[in-house]
Amino acid sequence: MTPHSVTPPEMYDAGTPPLASRGTEAYRSERSLFAGDTGSFPLELRQALVRLLRGPYIDGTADAQLWNTILTHRASLQQYLSEVFLLLTVDPERKIALLAPAEIDAVHTQPIVARKPLRREETLLALRLRMLLDRHAGTGTDVTVTRSGAREILAEHRQPGAVDDKRLDEQTDASLARLLALKLLVPTEVPGEYRVSNALALALPFDSIDQIPAYLEALDNAPDGGEAPVQDDTAEESAE
Image (tube, rainbow, N blue to C red; front, side, top):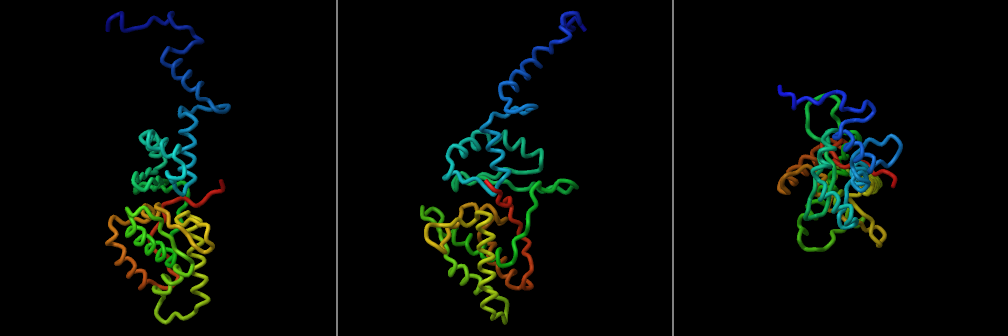
């Protein structure tokens, strides 16, 4: 080792950190947003993280500034989210961004927000609406469904021998309420009519639309009231 590779101890001020450390501290100080803040992200990037974690998804058509922040800083956001076993999914065409749990076989790696599986009727309705959404892809028109339309869909998938119309009405209202809570359906100005969100295409784990009919058939043969093994990979709706 040459003498030039060692910095004499007397050159350091005991109360002053090295230059690199001073630079890091100055960087953090400039972005300090509250007492004890040790983060390095600027305000807009932290806000984007909060919105993503709050869920259920980000609609880029509704918030262009937030959407641009996510696209610009996608790598930094994913680096942070990877620390808590979450993946950032971005669909540039549909302008939808949402979080999904990473698949890892280890303890204490479950998503921070618990995911409740969609019930049978909720899944049936969501799958049928996703098929409708895919058929309208590229048309530039919104896909909508009415309460009566949702009821007809669930009526087609009734269990054999089921004739209780009151029960069907309850299942229809409960399914609509769940999809509305997840913002996979969005109310319109017309009472009883809902717009199908583009996020629905990302919320259901199918690589191809061709897989859905077989899954629907399997659900038709499932026990009444049973839960479908489809997880909604969006966080539950939180209060704004």
